[in-house]
Figure (cartoon, rainbow, N blue to C red):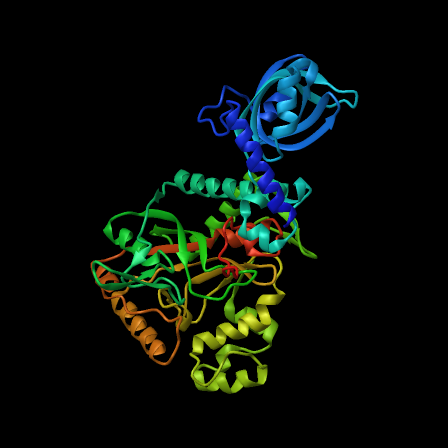
Length: 487
């Protein structure tokens, strides 16, 4: 029998003893209290009431020094037989365990070691813990356990709690920013009859009552642009999106992004906005604009350079894609570049993207706006007026090619949009699982007229991973997707 099973049995026995002696181990009411942080700010001899989890317990004869922890911090509390009486003191010593939640009332004093402490005059059990804290609160280092049982990770690892709180602050500041700029927060469907808005493979489900297939959204884009058609001029959504792709340090099938659309703006306006937005959310979260990511120092002080995709490929791969203007000629060249995942059926745009990902993306450190992608890569973006082979698109890229956001001047020509959807259909028939389906209703919406519009999506998980220099996206997602454990 393992130690944990034995302790489980002992804790159940203690629970039954408490119940049989009139102690409710799970009361519904908590008496008035202040936070631990507030109690720690009080002067000696002040009477305080605090509540939290018992995280340390050291018996020293007729006195016991323990620690109680709430969301604001940790504080020492002292139980004394002299102060509580023999029976009450014994009850705490024998029947309270690490992990229990309790409410204590007492007077502050300073120990010989100079630690502000509550001398407990009264205590109540708020919740009895039936399983022990991880490694007796000395830490939780097993990666698999940390991700599967995030509650234990948050209890044991202060850094995990810090990351979770910073994420909350950043999401709040993103909302505050767009609200202050006159954007309306909206909601669009997660279950969609036709997925779209990104080149990605969707998750498929089935609606029993309607007897139709449904898809989890890969992006909210096409619905947000319908709202621009309908008369909104500034909309945004903090959206959960789902893509049926691999899981690694930079990808999770379920992720969060902020996506917004702005009528009468273009992709140059988007870059200006991002240069204003990012420093504000970084500093509001209490983080520096210059920080280390691995061995690299990154500087998010604006402005950020703006370089075309063609220029970056020319700089790092040493080829000019305009010398290879079609699929056949570029494929002949790409074989010399030793790029995986490309064959004779690969589309021109995807080949260009693979050259960039192989040669340029890993070399980028400081933020740079990569602009003007080939039209084949961007079926929803507006063509450049002076060169319709390219579109008015941007990606903010940094540190080994982390793609923090993606945006463009939106295509509002319904005839052009219709032809690009048809090209996506052709790619799908050729075996491209990440191509976008033809959305007839969206084309119909565009035929009713959409003003010049710019739109952008920014991945919140990746942004926080970068800012906090974590090695795995799972560190910044409280409940990441994991393979089920074997029974």
